[in-house]
Length: 132
Image (cartoon, rainbow, N blue to C red):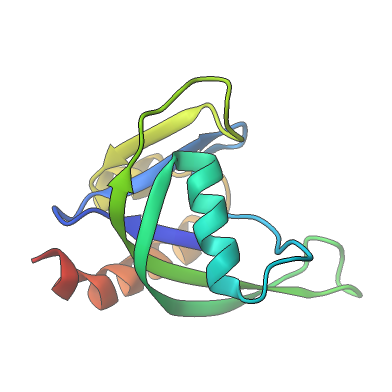
């Protein structure tokens, strides 16, 4: 589960993780009833942002555990409702950054740049009416 979060100004809220700049995301926990709950929790834990207006962007197949154990990730897009103060050391990431989608994509090294470009472009098109 990952979430592409945009502010009303059209910038992205990005997590600064050990693997580099990336989308907030992670695995569903036992008590969570739906993907939206996971997306909201992960966005909070990794970037201290509250997210509204979540929309599914895409489901992607992952061979992270090997070709015989495929898994699937739901990618959501959403609108930032509130940015809480950042306190270093309290979260699952080193920090958060607000940046233009083009800047994020130019600095993205955590995975497949082509796939990330597709996901961000699609999310921007679906969320953009909310940021105008």
